[in-house]
Image (cartoon, rainbow, N blue to C red; front, side):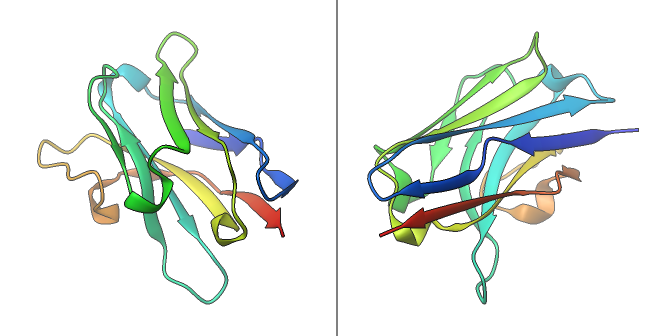
Amino acid sequence: QVQLVESGGGLVQAGGSLRLSCAASGLTLSNYRMGWFRQAPGKEREFVSAIGSNGVGRYYTNSVKGRFTISRDNIKNTVYLQMNSLKPEDTAVYYCAAANSPRWVAERADDYDYWGQGTQVTVSS
């Protein structure tokens, strides 16, 4: 049974930092491209960042470029999202997802096969 479990969310002041983790089980992480998405209240889920299966190729939505960094440790079966200089507009539930599609497009949620349950990130002004 595949499980993706996010952790590291919480309440932080604007300008602060958080590091999200996504621990995978039931799959070999090195076979999957990994992504982070987020959904704010009343808004659609949106792409945040993604990373290729071997760590080559990192993708970011424009609003987080220069502030967020995605990384992965295939030995630990874990993917990370380091979030710096957080803004109130970053407030959302953050989800990690795993993709094994040969036609994977980082920003396309439908290309991901497995999803975590999400972790709440709240940034106060």
